[in-house]
Amino acid sequence: MIGFIVAGLVIGALARLLKPGKQNLSLLATLLLGLAGSVIGGLIANLLGTGDIWELNIFGFIVAVIAAVLLIGVAETMSGRGRGQVRR
Image 1 (spheres, rainbow, N blue to C red):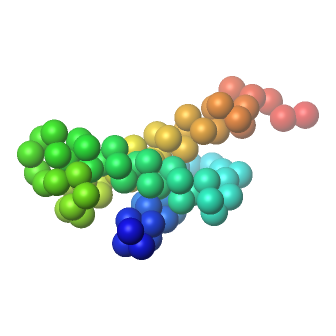
Image 2: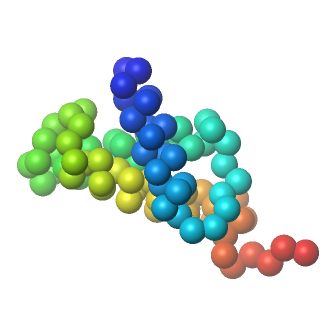
């Protein structure tokens, strides 16, 4: 369980580094988005037969980071901080 949390935090942090621009996300939001990306990556890796959903493998890790980047974009858009907004 602790390993899953640490992996989620690492995946979330990597996703934030890869996503251009400044994200106004807390550490908890980064962790939750990383965990969600981790589950999505595990599911996709499992569906493609490269490993179990809870097993850490390179393909699942890469897909998890990509999923977390996309989830950060969705979170920014939903909170109104996406590219389409103009700050005054």
